Image (cartoon, rainbow, N blue to C red; front, side):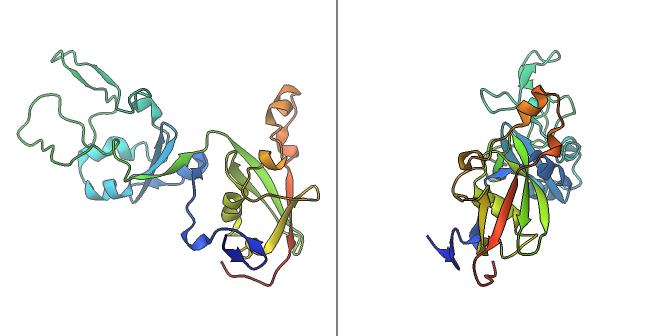
Length: 228
């Protein structure tokens, strides 16, 4: 594998995140920066919003920007939920917020064009990653500077992905050795695979506030500064 100084790992210039937390999705809640999540995945619909800017059919999508809209979909088919239209007696998409982009009208119309190809929810061009179904907090302490930060991370993220989250706080994070309770962490493994257990359920069972105990990862400087 490529090396960053003394620390083996991926080249972060082309690093692609696999997981995003609900809180991260919620930040993208404007028409010019519009994300949604559904059925376990995260989608960047900003290009769609730009293409249909000013179109009333975009309104139901803008209203749910930054939110999870899994309830719009049939989990078995991945398609929008359907129902029998009481007016026509036909099977059609169920859209309680109103018809939106790529959903056909209730009745035939001369201004309806279906030459857009696949509807936006059936393609993968907007997919950016998976939604973290379970998140947890982790404390990262830089032993060189004594600075510490608490990050919300996905339970299935590898240590490399957590390191990538930490880069805004320390651009040289890959030049440190990451340890927990004196043991060097395997950066290809998750927190739990490295023995850092998620004890949230136990704290809930004991009716204790789990925020008072957040596992701490210690970073030990081990290399000349390497700009990422």
